[in-house]
Length: 238
Image 1: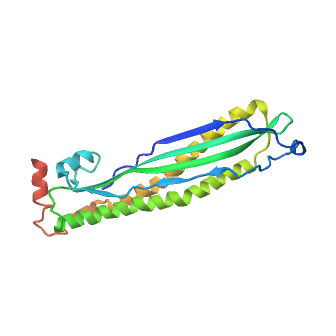
Image 2: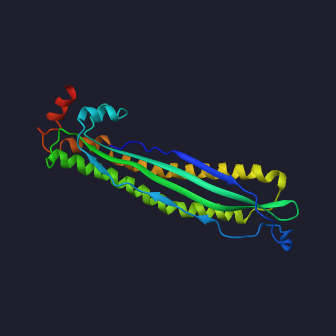
Image 3: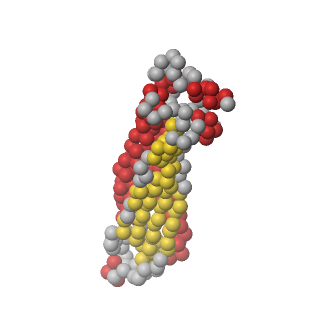
């Protein structure tokens, strides 16, 4: 059983006034490309860690939103933080108009938690332990696949941002600063929406293996008198 992904988004922007462009470009209808922006994408993963020190009762308190018809014997907890930094510079054309140029684009995604819990009542190497470990391993694989999806999606997102600027027209000085703030907000929202879309796919994939049918199958995987029917229910009642 997985926990919901947590995304904390920070958008950082900077407005800076750059020097004028050469005079022969002063009447440009579309802003010329001066220099490519500094682009950095940081993805900081975290290897999954196993915690076998939590009781089945503790796991069920932690997963308070799960279906009460089933008790939790394993849990995968995952959290991620994201930050989108961007600097946009208005460059004077020399005729009172400005071009907006992306000087720096720096998204950062950090996996801050990836923990796998297995009820402490299950001895390592037992049939029940192996069943729970294998199931949680599927959740780990889904989380790691999402990380690959993020790595694949971010370059395309950054390319779209830079393409937007290549199509922009010069702006009057009075609206350059408000436009910069609007663009910083827009790209921050777009970044957050992109991660949310990828996470919805992750949640969908988790849901495919967290079903009543699958839980029932796993609960009988070790025979009719396994810890799933004896030790763990007794621990829950204590």
